[in-house]
Length: 90
Image (cartoon, one colour):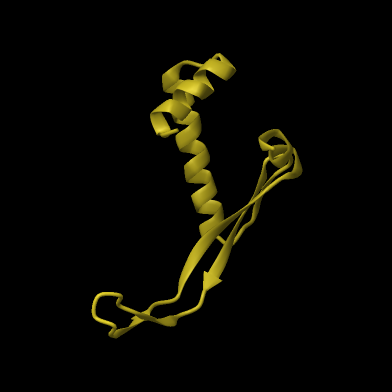
């Protein structure tokens, strides 16, 4: 499912117009990104939790040449599904 299909599904499930569903989805994504950037953890009971984790710098290898390369440290977003979401999927 891509973003346009998700907007269509949100509009159909909630009774919102597609424009309002797009605004809601964009607002959720923006608020989530800002909260994670600020170091917060986002918990949606029954759905799951978003958190930020630090991936340490490491040495990798170029598969074509075999030459070692340095991979910089970076922050990565982690998602852990909640029990209700896991139950609906399985």
